[in-house]
Length: 288
Image: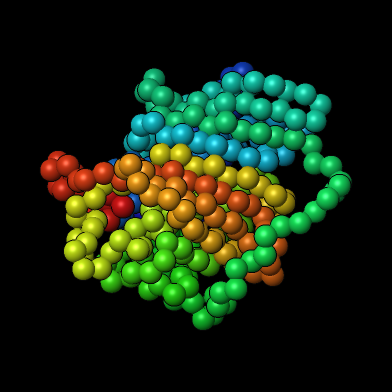
């Protein structure tokens, strides 16, 4: 019987193990209860962030840009190769290749540096949305993960028509103390609501069966960390889809703490195609 996914289990998956010079091994996690046969791309992103942090232990991860080329199967393993492009006293850059069964599944370009004192400082203000107590509870994706939505009840409902933006309050338990694991966890959720944000204006009459006729996939995710990954309680993930067309979508977003500190920014490119006949045999929850 498949066990439900959990935040604690996800953190174990992120924590890849060194197996050689600039090489790491990671698990892809067990089969969950939702029927998915492949891991979310953001899982490979999180593992690459941790691998780079272990490769550059005297620096902190500042940004990561992932391109997902092939799906990663669950109930298996992956190998991560950290290809160092530059390693200096203050900055370092690497391209992390994520392989499964000798097939390249993702590449993640990571920038790390040694933080210094402020020369200038500002950040975007937290959007003025209702508090988590007033937001709409959403379904639990995993144990230790609580999601609440502003102005939306069900992101997959054809009745949820509105502007191409979504604001989601998210709370994790446990919150990791290690900076690399905390950043991997922050990055993981950036891919979860992007395509739903893009589809929000295109639902309603004529698209009531959108998820039955459209195939979607996250193709790339970028995340930049502006502050140390330390927080308590809720985080606000704000999404805005600024463009969709030519079979692709683009979403940008920000992550704020409940007290208004901006900890990260992110961007996502998604693939949107008509559903192939073979895809309709997969249960809807397993292919979202």
